[in-house]
Amino acid sequence: MNILNNTIIDVIITAGGTSSRFGSNKLLEKMPNSNQSDNEKTSVILTTIKKFIPFARKIIVPCHDNVKEHIETCANSEYQAKIDFAKPGETRQKSVFNGLLKCAETPPDIVLIHDGARPFINKKTIEETIAKLKTCNAVCVGAYSTDTIKITEKSGKIIKTIDRNTVFCAQTPQGFDFKTIFEAHKKLQNENFTDDCCLLEALNIPIFALVGSSSNKKITFREDLPL
Image (cartoon, rainbow, N blue to C red; front, side, top):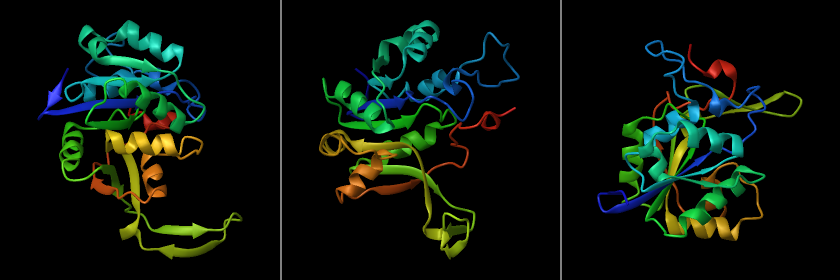
């Protein structure tokens, strides 16, 4: 059991997607690093997992068999001791719920939920998310928009411009008191929300924004991998 500041922390890393826009399974792609040979380079999913190892009692990865086999084959013994797997769902929400059910077998105090395709997350943001959860039940990491935001019709016609200072672009990790997010998932398990904070919003449970790093990007397209 790994306890940070007397707080039991589990991490769910979502890895059940199809990577349709990337063209192949982006989680199995090697992270570019000019200082390493091809054999030494680490995959996207293992790079992401590594960032959370120091903080987690256990890491639950909802994923398909090919990703599970990759992790079991390539992860070192330190990783293996903390990693468990859950079945992927038809939607991201269902995958996370399967992960939460695994956590519930021995409930943690808090849970961090992170996209497997966000390998650029830094230690400082993880630490700040955990610290923020000492004073609230839900934290959403993200960044305020630096672009001017336009609202359009389906035709493409611009309707209006909104104040970008109020536009918060959600990232992950999203951190929660475990009981709070688990109960929300149980109540709304037949819905299809795109992130976990949406469930709490639907139940009028307060969520607090935490400004993270602009480098914490999600790999969606092949050009999102740095050269």
